[in-house]
Image 1 (tube, rainbow, N blue to C red):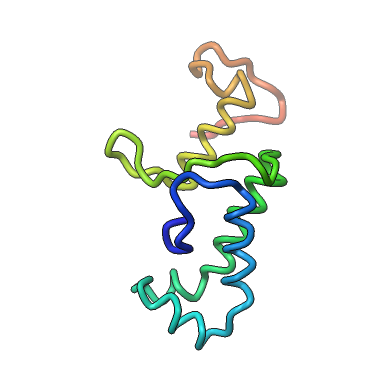
Image 2 (spheres, helix red, strand yellow):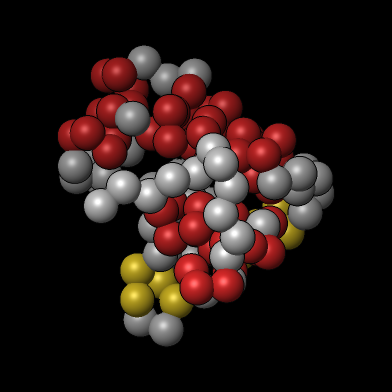
Length: 114
């Protein structure tokens, strides 16, 4: 959201409009308009990252376009990334993932090799 100049608290539709805009630009336009994104890789992949984030929020997590989203990069001073976010999401979806290993039941399709 920060690279797209979307406020830290915005409707998902605002993020969608920003993603559509950035995806409509040529690479030359992207380099000019988004020069503040200093990392070449980050700048050249803005469309992919924005589309992925929007699709995940809208279709993966089921947020409506009028939902207000708070975009954060840190929580209690610690960085939040997709891995941590995915872990938090999965734990909230599957009760067994939140249980200590000693209490988890084993299934025939899940073997841990040492």
